[in-house]
Image (cartoon, helix red, strand yellow):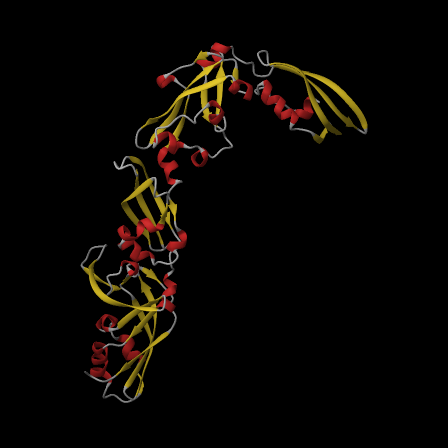
Length: 409
């Protein structure tokens, strides 16, 4: 029976009994099949670390009832040691960053709900004897004899702890910095209350959101706007992963912008650049017609793929008309010169001509095309191309054709 239960002597009596009660069923012990169907506690002495079990079951088809005495388990310290040497730790099986109501304690400065019954859900209390030879974890019965008071957060902007005072069986424990406490990272906690709005992100292109993060960021975050105000403190993009990281300073919506936390929010799932195959349209303009008419209007019909491919696209690509289709609307783009983030002068970014903020996610930096063919038929030059690079990312665009009317203005 002792081998069947295999109880760790470092457990206290309560813990050992709980494990024994949960260990019913069939087990093979020393080559024999043992089945325990019931366990009854005949007596227990937590101070001495002893108890007696009545075990009912059967082995090799023979029913048995055995009374087994256990000794040598963790002894309970005396009441003075229980309260004066109490230490706290988070329970291993709880997600305290998600479930512990730190916001009420910290933002609202209200600790009325943080009773022993409440803390017991999240925190383990343990104690030891002065000699250090008795290590003991509070049982539900011990918690029932415990009063918790003065629950508070102690710490700075990043690391801190939740401290509290306990009174056990009428004896008040340590106060101030010596009182039981558990570590707590308030930045990680509040980060669970401000999360990414992936559905919103999926409708937007990342690079324009990055360039205009101050316009978009609140719509890309999910949070309780009645309680909190997030301020954008920094932004970081990953072109390859099509994602953003926003640094947020979270304050209370209390009229004073009382700071609560600082953390980063990862935003992914933006509209992929491959969507440009369907969204983006490249057309002709007067300038584009003039450019190619001067070179090909008088030439014979035929295949000019090699010649057009050799042309530096920078000579003519910025002369095209460009549109992005969204919600059955054509959003006209214009080529702007912007400062390169890598230094070395200006680069071209195609941005909406409209000042409507809802289009600001459209931002096409240095789009590059590869000409696959160019054929002249009458007064038309059909240039077949595909998009191969945009926003510092290589793309494999669909083959498209732009027809240029070779008539000078």
